[in-house]
Image (tube, rainbow, N blue to C red; front, side):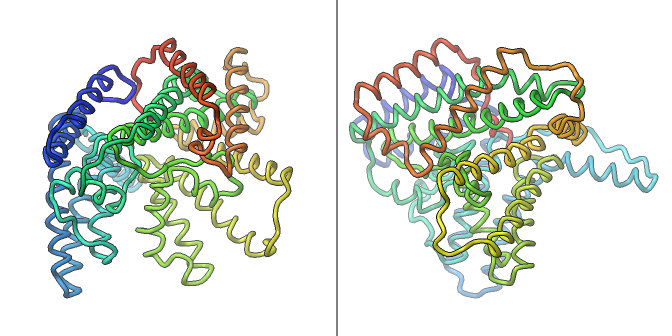
Length: 473
């Protein structure tokens, strides 16, 4: 079940009706857990067993870790949790990838190894809910939090349908305390939730799917090289598509939660206005970047063990972050590029930064544009299925195929150019602002008109219910 479908609309109306019915709070939470399992089962019912297994094992492991005072047994209990969760991800998500690479390695030694066909289906959202349950167990192990008092609250924390398949990646403190007492939305909260749902659907259906996806498919589906303009516009189209697709999902998730009376953390803060790459990761997929920082980068030593170790830790974190996105070396290359960007930025900042220096507006604009173009370059590896395809795209971007026939019709050139310019303008204008603050300052008639126009565009677009890009991760 996807947010941009009529099925979800009916499902959500039923969930709201049950949530606002005069029922005991415990019954309402049970209804939400059942609804969340139904939401997940719409893809592939048997995979509910994996979700249930992860929930039950981490519940008991966290309880045991909290009771145990000895370091050795606590560590072994944590290993059980890590082995189960990461083992399931490794098997379902990386099993075929491992077999293919083993086959290639054996071929390098002259061994003709033919692995069996890999017909395992990847469970939707396994990376997301695995990180959610791991954050719970790790927080208990690190004594950052006590275990939840109620298994029902914990189960709802893991399965809560708005964040279940594509985030935001919530921490225990984000949701479990909210489930402890009755929650319903106030009228302003409910209306704002509906407004966010409309905004998210507009981003996904109108901008990502209808306006930008066709140009992306033409450019990345081309068999050969192309003029630099087409390569850059296709890459910028993907930059806009993946932002509007994923930020759209997060916005809908936050909106649906608000309609039920719950708050989810912000996942995007106008990332294409970032000045520098550390700033980008403070604005892009915030729940993942903070998860990697707190549970990987910092335990590796962070920046506490000298400059050389800091650069190594940055690279390890970003390489694994890239691999988290998919079982393909192109994702690792994408993560490696970001690790390199962050390391170079850190090196330059340590030598060039002056205390108290503030960038002028033109300088900030220039650096933001440079950051955006560098980020676009990394998207080539994220979107390309092979290094050969990425190589053709990179060569085209730098003029190696200047004489090739254009692949983008004029209408796509215009659409991508206009949307990209508008997106960058909005992001920079909103760089130090929030959408909530903007809404508060906007007259009601203007805000209502804008939402009405978005809703009309959604209806006219008649989206085909395309899955969100991050469902595959």
